Length: 205
Length: 205
DNA sequence: TTAAAATTGTTGCAAATGCAACAGAATTCA
DNA sequence: TGAATTCTGTTGCATTTGCAACAATTTTAA
Image (cartoon, rainbow over all chains, first blue to last red; front, side, top):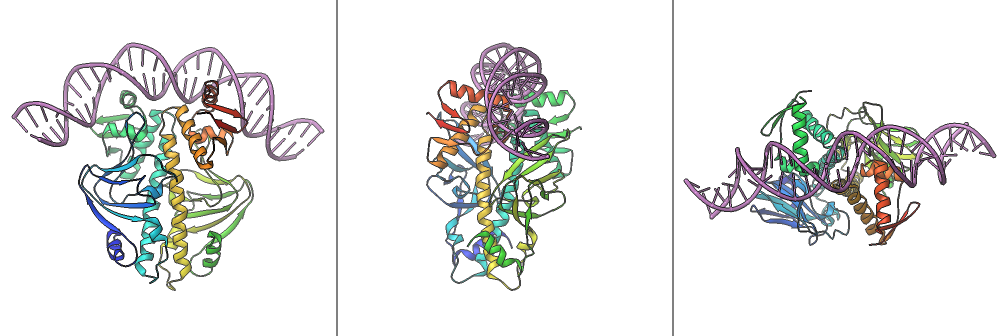
């Protein structure tokens, strides 16, 4: 059973859930207003954004299908102006964590299935987070790039990989300066470690 | 109900679980051997360790009470020599993710409670991971230190914080060179941002 | 209690990185 | 289609960082 089916079924019974559409450019949720909320993205893409003190836009995370997010996943006392912006048209489920933790009186099968599905989704989330942490833990841009490429390569069982996002976004993901990253990519090419054409990269090692 | 109670109760019924003691220095689990495993640390402390190609010991993560870990949380195809070492005497629950995902035939209440508890524990885990990612995303050592201090400060509702681990371990956690971090701490002191005495730090801003 | 091990603190130096600034290519959107 | 916006690619320069190496202090374990 798909996540969306489960949630469609349970919605009316015991947990307050909303399935909503969000046009491109609209705000799906804000972490300071919606406490303890969980969102599941059913389709589309979205970014988790913060504006820092200087008004710079920081993209902290980005979400696609079946990703799960919300204030419930953030450290208590989120007093940051965090919000999730739909970068494409999105469809999402929104509900409160506390609502699903409460034991339902009718002991409905779907409630249990929902919790179990959530466990599955969150497990996926922590796997992605572990990957991200592993990459960010690398000390140099070169190491970050190579471990990122290596992960993409393992996922696709191939030395030929396609970057899933722009180089600008990649620099954000690796949390390094874009121009410094470009310089490092150039070095990797010059030294014969990789071959690059557009957003396609071939690992030569 | 405590996690340990739940698991004690469920153990005999429908999910194969082991509660084990581990003396200091022993290995709790290895990710390459025990696939799809989940461990819950009931007491003690442990480190997630990898030996890199040069034989250097990398501490990737560290766990304490109620932390949850195991190969199930790692990217598929973990071909890394990852293992969890008890740095103190530990008590832990070990089981397979697949076992708890299977619907139990007796539809036992405890099975449902277990899944719900796991959800809770994992939620906590992702919150910690988000914190870590946020810190690692900072570009400079200074920013990493300050955001780490700020998080500790918020947690304890005080400008006076106590580092929960050694400076050497802190450098690992922030993923920076220890000597460079010491230098930066010294600058922060000299510039009047912080006051430091042993592992106690007072934020002066 | 003493030796061994780990942690803290410090420094010079080379290398890596971020920053700023710019031009050209590609993409988006009205 | 044409203008505006975003993305890619590049470079010089100042700053930050990692690395190596060492001494002093503290902690651990025999």
